Image (cartoon, rainbow, N blue to C red; front, side):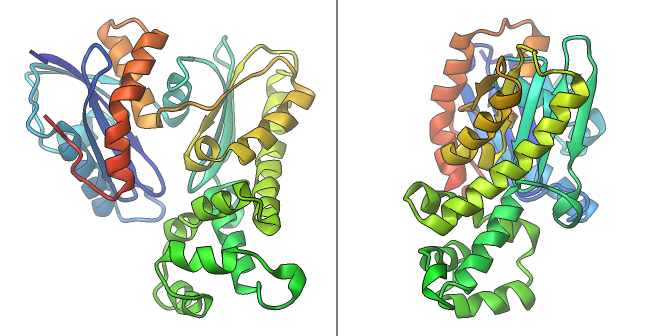
Length: 327
């Protein structure tokens, strides 16, 4: 039993996720650890993050054949988990995002800690814009939203027109008591890029609840990444293309207001696009690529199996658990 399994891995600016699935799409384990972004953490810290996430997902499962997607062979071998037969599937960030919507080409709008827009045509032509980090780019990213939210919270008492519930929710999101604690947190304790980006979820929630300043922040970020998307569409000559437009990352997949604005802007210039906001994360997209290489046919039933069986693991991961394997 479970002699052939698939492991999907997704490493990003805030976290590494790993997911273990069987041939039916049933999720057997999930692991989450810290950042694996080489620009922001050391190589040893990135390796440790992959190690922790993969070990948590695998638990005590040791299948005879393991199909691995989202991490190269040399990276997986360093984790120290052996399978009698291992197969490695090339799966970059864009491929993982597309696979989460059962697509192999199309447009990807990724907004998580960082941000980029990428497009791949059916003939293999590709354009990738941004991924430039918080200083030089990352237009429409979680970092941008988090930073704008923190700034709005700090200025909320300056005048009536600046009043916003962010003054209360942002400190809570950062684990402090008030805005007066944020200065120390940012400048002395240096919460870093991922810490600032973590505020984006609170800003998005405030926006959905109708806070005017939070809505302005979310819509501005959506407009910023939509401008990058327009550049990708034009460079690919895709204004008349029937492509999937796939959301990826915590902001694009988690905020309806953000995604609706991106789609509204995109459909104005490319009305045949098919927006998709996947309900599974990119690590599950990596697992789908591994399953496909294994010979498992993609289907909506397979996708639904992954989605339904992963729900409890996602809740555990969101709650901060690194060990999410249940047998």
